Length: 305
Image (tube, rainbow, N blue to C red; front, side):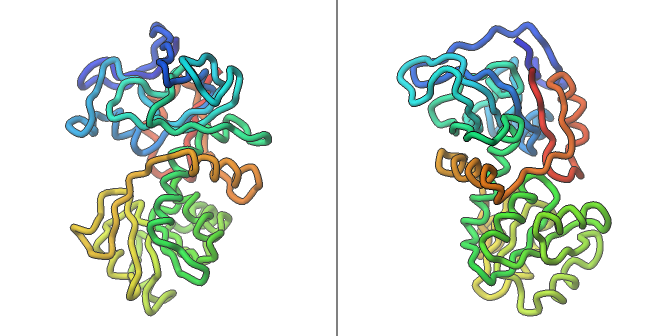
């Protein structure tokens, strides 16, 4: 089968077409992958940055998100062959990823049905970014009338966090460069936009003199951002800024489960949220696409035949 792999320690990711198709175990299903995406985690894994934290089992097939159809069932399952499904691989090692024509899914992995009206191409970019946005906002306990600062609002997680904070009734302040990036986050529901290349603290203080209720920390230095919190406010970080750095901070490691995935799919189906995609790549283009990950407006998608 075709896949994008790391073939040895220190190797660059490369496309190949000679891997054996995996077989599902007793608690697994085999998914014919039709769509995936590029996440920050994938970029780190491809660069070897997860060595020491996770076992690299070569050849490492990269990729976390998936959407496709159930091809085979290894044992008893609620799914049937042909069911459209999507989700996120959540394994303790790197080896059997989703940038491949087939992947086995089961155990601790997140998997859910794709509802009618949601395209596999959309479901394939939804899982990890969406679950991360939901977990981040749940940690902040966003309420109507809160002011929430989303630092890193233009990426895949940020784009969904802006929408979910707005849906929760919050006034959203987003960070973005002037121009297309500002237009992008305003279109997603940000009430105010601040330029992170300027005096970020001064701009936010002008909008919220008493501080903000919550901060979604997806980019930038967490310490000055934490100084913008109002009394009782909280900061939720996906990039390692936690209680050891500030008492009001919590570090988020998304764990996409069935509840999160069903909620995300239902919200997309109902039109409550959308997943903006800046560019779609074919599987063999992914090694080149990894280099262009930073600075995107929304997600980078991966399409398989």
